[in-house]
Image 1 (cartoon, protein in one colour):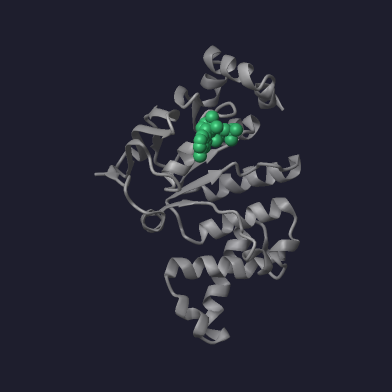
Image 2: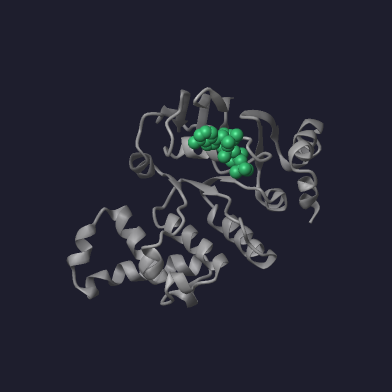
Length: 258
Ligand SMILES: Nc1ncnc2c1ncn2[C@@H]1O[C@H](COP(=O)(O)OP(=O)(O)OP(=O)(O)O)[C@@H](O)[C@H]1O
């Protein structure tokens, strides 16, 4: 039986020493959708994201992947099932080239650290795959550039490539356009659209213009709870959503028209 919802939470709750940051959240992410988690500052978006990707254990509630509980599983094990979060390229990896970064991610998927002991020639098929992934995210020309020397927007695209290397069924993206100029934002929007073919994407995103252009469904969080859900037209005209945004981030909804 195919599952309508690829990722689901039931009664998901996280308390930090008595403070309820995530309060009884029932999230349903439909297979093939680009789904956004939005909400004003402090709404609990990052906490939900960290619960889903196992960076935090929930206080209560369940997480289901394709109908099966994964609440107690470790990040590596759920990645093997196909649920993968994008990672910021760490300081160590910053001193590798773009190609090397993608190659390491591919090796991770294959679980073959022994590749390190093999000759350069035996790495060639991996190089070809890594180059194809770089091409997919528009970074072919950056293959031999050290990551530390790449422009910010291109680094974020490289993070998407390293995530794709794990061939995820569900990609979890944490503010993929954060800190970007308009040109990079447009490029990332196109990139996410392209790589979401045949996959499901759940993203935390502040930029409502990005959300309006990309997302099939939007969940609005406020004070740890789901305030509204629907497509962009529905949630952006919902008076409760406008009020929640006005209360804490006056003006942010105006970005939507940008
Ligand atoms: N480790 C923690 N200990 C205590 N309180 C926390 C912790 N992490 C988050 N919180 C609190 O939980 C609430 C939700 O935080 P969270 O970062 O999930 O919100 P957010 O929607 O991602 O906000 P932003 O848009 O500002 O990133 C906030 O009030 C925050 O202060």
